Image (cartoon, rainbow, N blue to C red; front, side):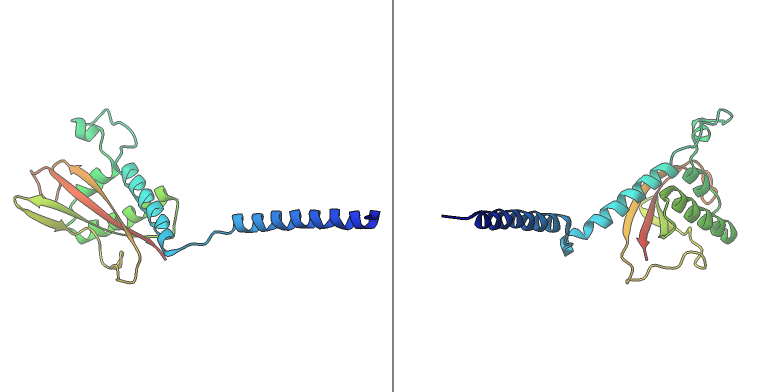
Length: 177
């Protein structure tokens, strides 16, 4: 025959076992282990952020009724700034500073590092158009882990190639230190 003291030890043992199992469940369910296959999630988030920022920069902040044509009425930040004379080092330097500042502002992240270039088609050739001043935007090294985001931007009569409408490919490299 089991005494009351034995029953108490049995109840205490069952309660302790349930408590231990529940604690183990909480610990194991709250612990996440990142494997090399999971590191691409950060890259995907950074790529989505970059695509969103470029889309915002390529959307007009307001419709300009005073514009001469539809292009002038809906001109975005990218369309406006990429049509300036990017062959001029001073204007290219100003554009670089403004682009990086705007990009970080839209992204809401001052830790972002940004590097970019544009390419356009001239007949059968694809030509690069330099937009960065090397003193402002340092070159990307092979040690940086970056993602690439792109955006096609239509330019109506750019100053760097007058009389010719261009659709350019803006390619931006993003990374964090």
